[in-house]
Length: 329
Ligand SMILES: Nc1ncnc2c1ncn2[C@@H]1O[C@H](COP(=O)(O)OP(=O)(O)O)[C@@H](O)[C@H]1O
Image (tube, rainbow, N blue to C red; front, side, top):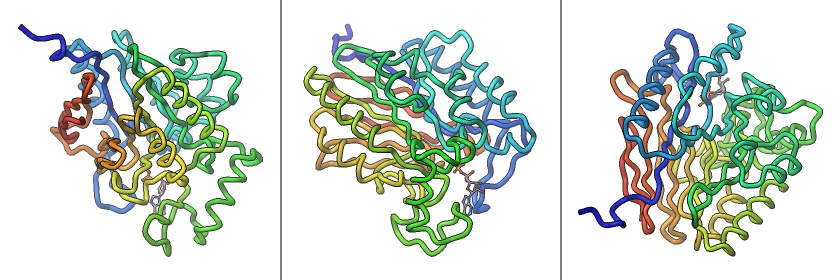
């Protein structure tokens, strides 16, 4: 007979960078990998079907870039979003949508706030808090199981990405200042001339403002007081060893410092953005950094998603396809 401990306390699904579009396959910017825009929808469908059959996840963390920026060329953003979200129709679990750079190539923050991709409101622990906190940001926390808290970050709070922020907004201006201080290229998506972790100062990344960082500290402080364990998630990786450095959050050190200050309660950080995926165990702080491979660049016949079982002493990630399985103590 299975002991109580052999059963997970609860489980959740993870998937990143679906980047669906009704578009022909094409190479990525560096011409190294194919992007299969239409197939991505079928891979998402397969993931949803898998989770339905497993019949144990409580929610999905959809880690961002659910549709591709190229949808805008065909003025097809709304149709693409409708098609991709249809895959979740009637599912017996919650879905938490995280915003990545491609969300902002397609939509303004105002649009997103009023779309099904704004899951803060319906899922947050304290709705009033979310609404009054910052009118156009999507960071929030929720507790799916007693003693556990999940934090969803808005990694493009300070950004020049697409049409996310109004060009006159303080966040856009701050982002431009941050980028231009380091990146001297006219094309701000180009990392040319930048070395090492400085290569992250490109326009398709973003940063988190002081207000959000303060909220993160306060949220973790409350979690600590309540004796909770915490999983943090965002589109963009925050540990240089968990991804290609060009994909790092601009102020990743600020976020890492906060996670490390709360290493007694933070278990893991889940992200997407770097389609190659990655993993790093910050052993000094016992925090696992998982960067999911992107569905959009999965070769035909494979996939990239997973189910995480949460036990009192470990997270067990069951990867499908390109996502490696692992036990995270
Ligand atoms: N090395 C680069 N130099 C110039 N522009 C780039 C470079 N890499 C990416 N871009 C541009 O940045 C944007 C985001 O790149 P993309 O590869 O679509 O991001 P993601 O990895 O999130 O899918 C695109 O407009 C792309 O053309």
